[in-house]
Image (cartoon, rainbow, N blue to C red; front, side):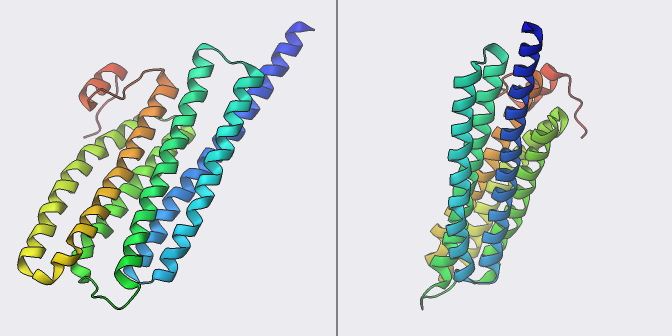
Length: 243
């Protein structure tokens, strides 16, 4: 009887974890969609769309709170220890990073509102192209990180860490590019700071995707790689660099 009860408890524990994981998946999809909608609003110069993005951010916040409550309840009722407890806490960290990606997407929507709501001068579309390309890149980072989370795919998670290295290069390159635009056309000066802040928000968005990839590696291999370089991670985990 004790064995049967124990197996039943473990089964329920797994079910509850799977329910939480499914909610995290939904949260990741919503975060990616938020950035997509924010950029679309910016491209279409549509502050109405942008306000909707800002309003939808509360859905991410609600999921954040709901998942947090489920994690607390799971810990209280199942009293997990050692690896199980660390894994549950790590899933909570994934949720925190996803909530923060939503904050960064909201900042892009805020750019659209500042630029196109009212009668003040609007930026040249050319100066916004770096935002469009960088947003596409970091959205692919988050999408890949969430696919890695779904399958506990260490190789895919490692690929996201590699993408973060390229993101750093892009970030500094786009700052130099913006500086060139300002020097060529002084009318862009008024928008320079806002666009730099937008690019910085996207860099942080990608940084959270990188964090999630690191959490996936911990969940799959029980190795904390947060403070390691990619070469060290590659060696530690025996991952082959596809490049």
